[in-house]
Image (tube, rainbow over all chains, first blue to last red; front, top):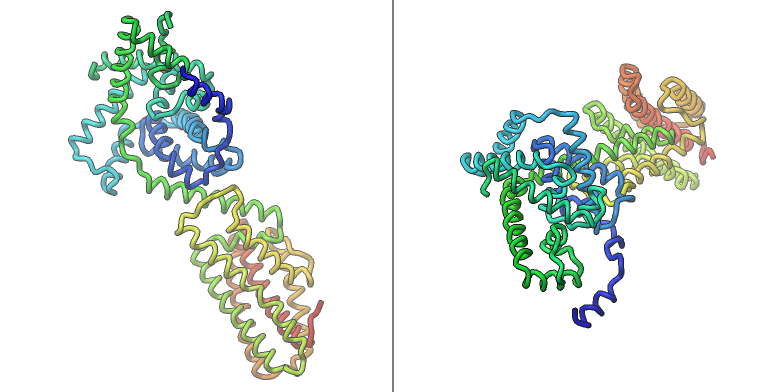
Amino acid sequence: MNGQARALIESMPNDIGTEAVGPLSFDEAFTLHHRAVFRTARAVVRDSALAEDVTQEVFLRLYRNLNSTPGEELLRAWLLRVTLNVARNTLRGQSRSMVRDNEYHKSTAENGFFVDAPEEDYERRVAIEEARRALDKIKEPMRSCLLLKQQGLSYREIANSLSLKETNVGSLVARGRKEFARVYGKIGGKR
Amino acid sequence: MTRCLDEATLQCYFDGELSIELMESATSHLASCVTCAAAARELEEESALLTTALAAEFEASVPTERLRQRIDAAVLGERVASAQSTEKRSGLAAFFAGLLSFGTQRTLGYASLAVVLAFGAVAGLVMMKDTPENPEVTAENKAPQPAPQPEASAVAAYTPWVDKKPEVQSAETPVLNRPVRNIRQNKATLVNYTPAPTPVKLLPGERAYLQTIARLDSTIQSNAKDMKPSLRAEYERNLAVVDRAIAATRTAAKSNPNDPDAADFMFAAYQSKVDLLNTIADVRAGGPRD
């Protein structure tokens, strides 16, 4: 490493991430993070209507805790930790229902939320089902590590979301990724 | 670096999670170690597979608009609930909760109240003009008039919030807090004359209002002969409107004994009558009663 890079590193604070960048407004938090929350919820509960319920509950909790949530730096991690908790609790209380999901897609298609052609929609749903079946075979917390990693979370955010040590995240992602590739190949995914 | 990279370090390297120092040494090791280079290629392939497999899951549409609407509605419900619980504790501001619900009956009630209060204001102005010899009336007569305004502004300030999807900046609810203070000011008029009613308990609160009304009414009746015919006609017309509002809200409160909103609304009607009587009584007495 050249001297310039070292000087740059030394000039940086040790704990950049712990400093709250400043609280986001509720609207900003929704705009920035509702997709990650909804997609994470849907990946866990496997039902779009339930994922909406979970997303609503997560943002309601954000609203109730606006003064005690972490700063912008770790807000996404906080939201996704709550999302995973709420989604798991929801799963415990509800049995998964493909029928309900199909009805949901039908109603949302009528409202213009999904505009894909039926064949495309079917192909996508098959792909989603295959990936979900492979994910089902992966143990926690590796599975959640993969889900969060695929959403672009840093190791630090993943560690914060799942209450893990940051130094363990790399290992968990690696093991989860290997396991997924193995299982997905067996299920019939492209491998 | 001469040692081979373990699985976790390789993953960290690939994810850009290594420190700059380790990143540099890992890069130089990968350039010279065939085994680690092969492991890195495998990792890349598996990562690409994972990304492709989960793409359908993560790229599926997100119903942003509907989520926004649902969350706005949920937050609104939260605000109303917290406002109601706060008001129940504070007692004096309890009837404000009724202002936040817009049932058909209540909306009609608001309309009638607005009419009543407008009549009251007109009556006050008429009396001011009719009794120029008493300069104190002017100052005094203006005092009760701000009372109806908070109710109107509370509703006006609240309604657009639903449509505009407001920014929820903090747990505090400025839109809701402002009217509560105003209502307290409004209620202060009553506190000067009677013990504060407990709005949740229907009968005791109602009795206090009735006593106040009876006292004010007797004051007015004792001076009735001095009242100008035009003022008296105006007063009786306004009184009839208020009485109708009280009767309607009283029926609603009786048929819904467990609904604090119904009781609150009835008290609001009583308060309107007290305000009207106060205006008339003060004018006839020629000065403030304080």
